[in-house]
Image (tube, rainbow, N blue to C red; front, side, top):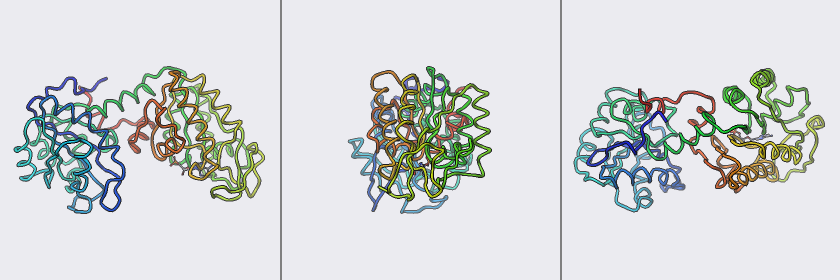
Length: 397
Ligand code: AMP
């Protein structure tokens, strides 16, 4: 690893600015999922148990540089206290007098949450003046929010340059998992890429064919690949203006020695709705008025076989319209197979991005994976092979 972890930090008596992801799902003013608070706890506990003052900085929503009480982090304070099991102080601004006073009042081992960073326009612009005002509040910077690592913001990049910077425990775990999955993986490596469209994942597919031994393509985007190979996919979701893109990815894969696996059978229906009448056909036998909504059982068997001889798996996107039963069958079956192989120690599996977490939860397979990233955009940019500004900024010269 080229970044410092908390193991190397002297925390005693230090004011530690910790970037966390507290952009939580809310309903009627209440937090509906506290996963991200729980993710921050090991870092906060580490800092406070070693005599540091944990000063949490975070954003919520998109207030676009203006104060907006509807997006105040004050709303989540009681949820944070409940998860951490201790009182957490709050300052109603992240810079200026109220933040400075709250920091000055903080004792070693205590926790403070500062108001939404995005109430200031400087945050998202990585504005040097805003960064300097934040930096005044701390001696050390810890980034524990991989999910914002693709944003070049003050609290992500600016602070990492202004103060001695360390990866928090959650960031460290994520970077270690991602590195084990693609940077220095055990081979053979396979990737599952599913989901709706090729057009949203061109860069991701292009990057992966250069890195993995087998690329398993599912979901709506597989239809575009099947059509590019000459199949008539009827009414299926298919990006006809991207048939050449699919062909280019196939050519690139061939040159890189990456095998592409497409569905060998498909579950088709005439309507896009749960429990629609359906049948299983080979991809060349889709009716004019039918659409492919899932991969079929022969595809699942073939993919399962690939997984059995795979050591490392990266997964993004579902095999079919998994929200509509029974078109969740292939996603469920392959996800469960991956979880089973992982649990038995045969496979290292990392998944994330978009609907993937929901699909794997739906399959009841998420707990069986080695690592599930909840990072969305940052995870996808990492799959695309792009350097993430927040991770680059943590790297030591
Ligand atoms: P993405 O956000 O690109 O990962 O796409 C996820 C979405 O793709 C889910 O909402 C699925 O319902 C949808 N999807 C997957 N397979 C198909 C398909 N064969 N036809 C239509 N939609 C699909």
